Image 1 (cartoon, rainbow, N blue to C red):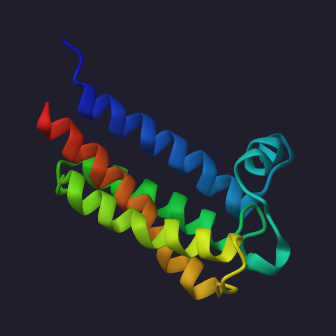
Image 2 (image 1 turned 120 degrees about the vertical axis):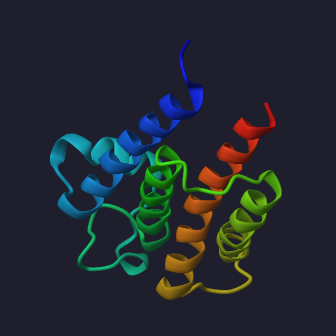
Image 3 (image 1 turned 120 degrees about the horizontal axis):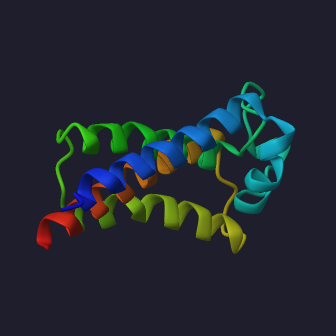
Length: 130
């Protein structure tokens, strides 16, 4: 029988690795994928990570690290905790989008990382509920 939790974590590791690689190396072959998932505005990006904006960069770093922990069965799973960790990213992005305020790269870094980790914790919690 296929272990969906392990298969899912391997898939997330692969996707996270592709995006993190694309963030730092920015190869031409991945640019359409990166551009399709992120606005890539230079003023919202780090100079040392040209492939994605700060929020997306650390979202994918959070996904990659958390999915590695998920694979090793070291990630706590909780739907509620996962959702709570995603909220800062959703609020930061939404409030900036509607013009309420201009986020900083530090806030994007923190909210993106929490959102990426939260996604994996949410998925792990949903897998444990089954």
